[in-house]
Length: 209
Length: 143
Image: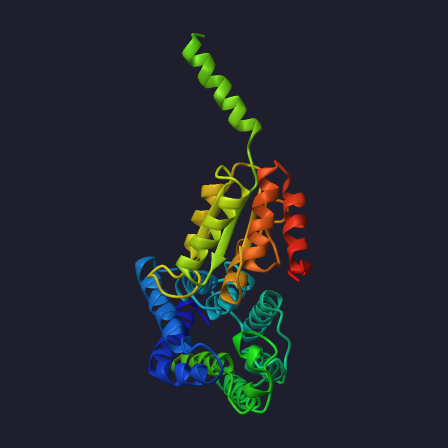
């Protein structure tokens, strides 16, 4: 995976967030403050702008730059969280021009660690971690088993989807939804839903490669 | 050195001696941040460096990293800065700019914490003392 692969991923993610903007906001309206779709869409628009203004030369630089734009422009909690995820991934990739599947796994593990350290959420708290963590685990396993990249990412995306669906019966323990207590049960977490979009975008980027 | 230069140099020395810990109020709302900063200044003393970083860059509800960074720079007199966030993205954004020993977060109620911090700053306290005083506000009982 080279720089153009990671640029393709970000572009796919931005397109998916834009397409699902209203759906994310509807999910957020149920248990949050109804801004997740709009915030993330604004953030990814800023990411595309930043990448167009100063084209990065390495995969790591793509992700660090994307993360920084998300942190600056989202405005909601998903900005620092996804921004940290992308920045940590980018840092983990360093200056390497070409990334192996194992390198991608390591970077995603660093991203997950960064998100959990910043937000303090564990699996089961009804947050994006509930989709992110199983996706990273599934990817790590598939890569270790020698699966082809596109197949491994398909497995990861399925795990993210299952993780997001599994947030429906959970009671939120982090973020704005946690104030609702038991009333947060019965709704999918918007952050978990947007994490599915980001993994789906990654699989699509692999399909193009 | 003429009298004027000497006076200026004395004023500068005095200003350095009186350097204070800075306070930054980070809120989802620009107006809320401004008003909390105003009440903290009112009670703590008008020379207490308190800055507001509220709302997003386009004036909506949320947090702006750039506003937080600018606010920190505006109150940093070399004695350290205490960030007092409201909740959610304000806390996460504050955590991104945290620098142990120089830029620290007070885990406190916004109004009570800001006032406690401002009063302590006004008394010339150090960063750890200001933080400790602000954090006492967490358990402060009103009744």
